[in-house]
Length: 411
Image (cartoon, rainbow, N blue to C red; front, side, top):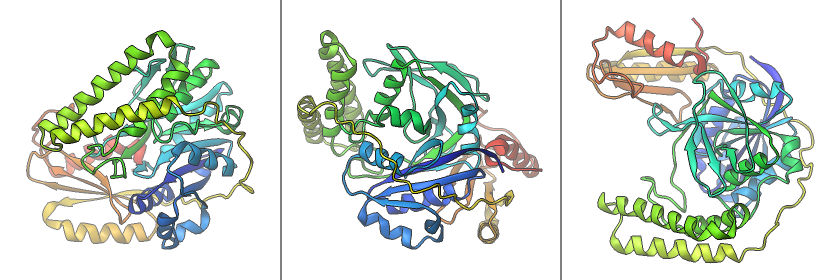
């Protein structure tokens, strides 16, 4: 258990109750003290919270508008921590997430921190370290794989934070009036990164602060990540370019965005996930959204109020993090043991391997335990060899060592 800065974890959720439930179960397994959980949720999804005993220890605020930036600002207003961390409702943190993500705030100059994000298979990196310039172009950033790297942005280039894994000093967010409500779900954190850079603020990139992001289905995106509507993306680009890009280069940047989005849609079409008419419809919506975005009233920032009513500490636990491992033929017994250990308050990782060379996959189940599946001879980290002979016990030991630090496994 760690005792450092008081942290408020803000989760914004809309129309994804099951994803929210899984996220909150993951947050309840964080090994950190003290922290509180602030959930900004739509009315339809609030019902899921009534079924969760953990909800009694959370701050729950109802907000029904489809505007993530405004919802995040409401979360900041209700947060009473010195540091405010953000995670998406379709993501789950490793138990050590807050310990790593907030450690750099021991240095007075650090205003923000950004962690790493694993993708749907729980192994590959979806997002690591990046910079972003005033045209919205991101570039990979070379940082230490284990230790935090402190970086100071410039007016031309910021250190990018990713919305599903980032934290800020609350006082900095209040000074900056939080997120711009003109960005209703896209480019909001990118805009904030560049505004921080303009202040020469220091951002810490923290590789060991890991979350797993599922890209759950939403009103704008199918489960296979095919977009259903690009209007808000077009509108956000118009807002972004008007604020950060000089007038002489906006046209060229917008042409780059159009070409990039068209390539993405054509790739989906070639794969059979879209029809040609869908591509035309989505591109038309992108252009319409851009036109609407150019007409949005600027400077919608409002002061962040103090609405928290006092820090609401989430009950902490010192229960151990353990591993339940076995071959695939014992799947039923392994699951039963995992459920029993979760019920007793432990963090459980269930490793279930077959005698194959299948790639490994890690998920956080709806029942509250981590499940790693794959072949005994297959690779977990994608940089490993395709096939390697292993004894079962040695393979389990190797996988435990790989995740020990983030999953807080002792022994």
